[in-house]
Length: 113
Image 1 (cartoon, helix red, strand yellow):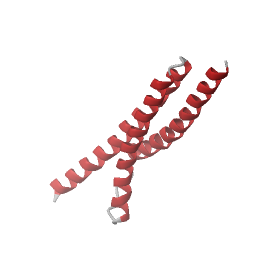
Image 2: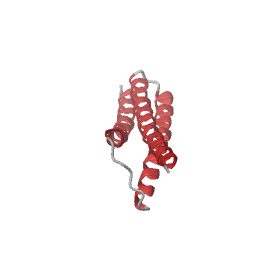
Image 3: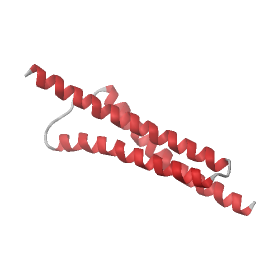
């Protein structure tokens, strides 16, 4: 029984860390997209936005796994790490949305200038 609990806790930790890592990667790609757009490299900026969306998808999969278990009645112990992961994901989603707008804006300015 103790081994099962330990395995479940380790799986929860892995899911939470996947959420944090992938959300962090998404935000990092979004920052790189803006930097590329500032330099006028819009192809690279768009590629970085695609990578950001892929990482967001992976983070979202981790979140969905948590939510599915919760819906089944498998209540997870809410930890500061899990709260941090959820916060990280929401921040990354917002940042990626804004990064796409910044890339569009830099491209529009570049075409007019």
